[in-house]
Length: 225
Image (cartoon, rainbow, N blue to C red; front, side):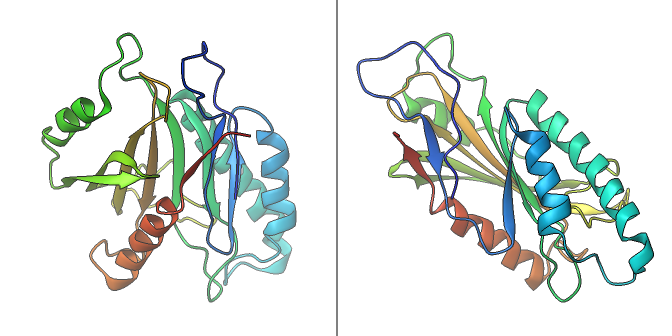
């Protein structure tokens, strides 16, 4: 569970949340992107990652962790530039293999100049064409939200987990939730998930990872502490 801070904004009539909470699956960790990123990466690489993927000799474990750190730092910097608040990753291997998946919680630059009713924004986003994908109106934390799902090519320079293999032609399943910040007109966040699964985006295994992410989003709540 995490309660990262949102950026301070001018006070409104209602009390706006100071962050959010969600329940992570076993073996997943949060990397904050606004502050404490370096310390979190140190913990991920040298505390959580006690094991390395099968096939990597023990003598190469340190090199693996250093290469993973460079990849994670690059991914974290890119996410932060795009308004990222937190990066979430699986750090414990399953059956000797690290899951290739991640999701990012980020602030979105929509509706900030003019407060627009959330439902109007969601309706507009739902009507946008998504090539090879779908948009569905849902509820998150008891409020209207949008779920978008689609496929895309994986950037070979941005592995989606510490044990990800760089493959330029690998496709990914992506799911994005878009939701307004409660009692804070004009502010929105997105929760973006990406995974190539087992290499087959239509496999049962890949579908199970998407269902796991949907279940995590189902635990999302605003924090007022």
